[in-house]
Image 1 (cartoon, rainbow, N blue to C red):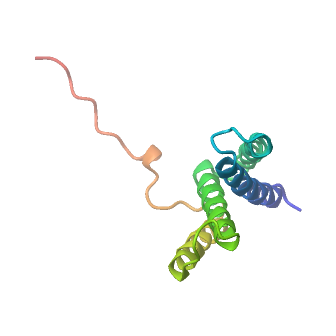
Image 2 (cartoon, rainbow, N blue to C red):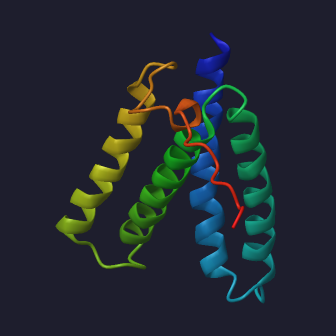
Amino acid sequence: MSTRSVAWLLLLGSALLEAVWATALGLSNGFTVPLPTVVFAVASTLSMIGLGLAIRSIPLGTAYAVWVGIGAALTVGWAMATGVEPFSLLKVLFIAGIVGCAAGLKSLPADAKGGADLAAAPRPPAESSRS
């Protein structure tokens, strides 16, 4: 298994932990309920560590978008499945869009450049401050 494949698996695991910590945060009632507060602290720490390790092999913007998108989709999906949020076909459609966009980012080649490389674009000369 390549380093890049391991990074993607680590990123997906971190996104799952994001859904865990977001759900625990909601259940913690402002950090006043001990068990969800502990689950939040552990899951958020592990999630951030996983994201940090994944960005060694995956570009930060791509990794962050996938991490947030998958984590949000799982959080809303879990909330609907457990009855915390009402089920809606439109929500499911939009969540599918988030997951589809994350999958699209994953499917791009590692060296793909989306549009112009702004860092390499020529810059106009600085204007003189002489009066």
